[in-house]
Image 1: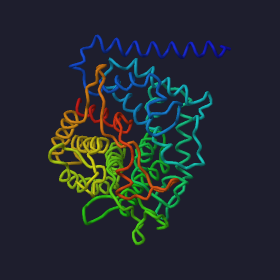
Image 2 (image 1 turned 180 degrees about the vertical axis):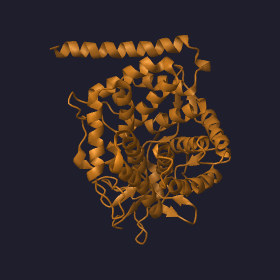
Image 3 (image 1 turned 180 degrees about the horizontal axis):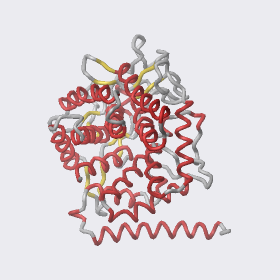
Image 4 (image 1 turned 60 degrees about the vertical axis):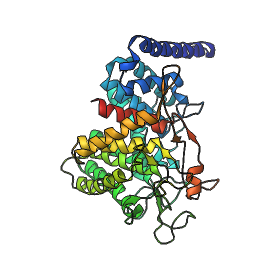
Length: 405
C-alpha cells in the first residue's frame, strides 16, 4: 500500500501533467481559431486544475454544478476529439475522488431527498457509457432509487428538498427530469420504463400549472402547495417573482427531456404546448441593446436590476436546440445565434493569460432557509454577482457546441 506522502506526490504530479497538457494545447493549436466551447473548457481547467474547485469550494463535492460543467466537458470532447485525453483525465480525477470502489457517492445522503443531488447523474451516465466502470452504474442506480421514494406533492411532483416540504421549484425540474428520462430510456424496460416517462412529463406539467402567470406568460420561481411559506402567495402558493435562472433551468429541462422522450409519447405535445408560447414571450423580452435577459424578469429596468448571463445562455440554448429539432420554429435558431453573438461581444472577456471568462453571473438564489430568503425583488438583486460561475460556464459550453455542429 502506498503511504500518504507517495499519494500526495502522485496527485501533485497528475495535476502538473494536466496543466502542462492544457498549456501545450494552448501554445500549439492557434487560439484565435479554436471553437469557443474548447476555449472555455481549457480556461476552466486552467482556473481549476483540480475539479473540486469548480464551484468556488476547496473540497470534493457531489453537486449539480460539478455535474453540469463536467457533462459539458464530456460533450465537448465528443465533438472536439483533440481535447478528449485532457477531459478524460479531468473527469476521472473527479469521479475517482467522489465514488468509492463499491459505488458509494462521497457526501451523498439519500435521506436528504434533495433534487440537487440528482443532476450530476447525467454526467455519470455519460461516464459510465464511455468508461464502463461498474462503480458508476451502482451510483446511477442509487440516484434512481432516490426518485422512487422522493417526497411528492399531491399531484405527484417532487418536493425540491426534504428541507423544503411541499415545495416545487422550477430549478428542480432541470435537476431531475432529464436524468430521470435518460435513465429510463437506457436502463428500464416495459411497464417500469413507461411509468417513468409518464412521471417525467408530469413533473414538468405540475409545476407549470402552478407557477404560470397568464398576465405576462411567464413562470414564477416556485410553488408552495401548503401555502405556508412567507414568500408564497396565500391564494396561489406562487413565489412573487420570475427569477431568470430558475426559468432558464425549466426551459433547458423541457428541450433536454424532449431529446430522450419517445416520439410516440403523448406527453411530448404537452411539453411543447408550454415551450412554444413561453419562447415567444421570452423573445419579446430580450433587452434590445444587449440581447440579454434580466435577473428578475418581471421587473425589467427597475432600479438595481441587471442583465444576467447564465439565464441568457440558457434561453439561447433552448432556442437553438428547440429550433434544430423542430420543436420551435426555424427563426428561433436565428434568435439563438443573435443572443450568442451578443454574449460573446458584451459578456465574454479575453483575459491576459489567454483564457476567456463569462461575466455578470448571479452566484446563487433560493427561497426560505436560514437566514430566510423571502423572494422579494430586493432579495434577488442582493445576491453576489461573479465571473465564471459554473452555472454559466457549463451552459455556455453546451450552447457553443450546439452552434459549432
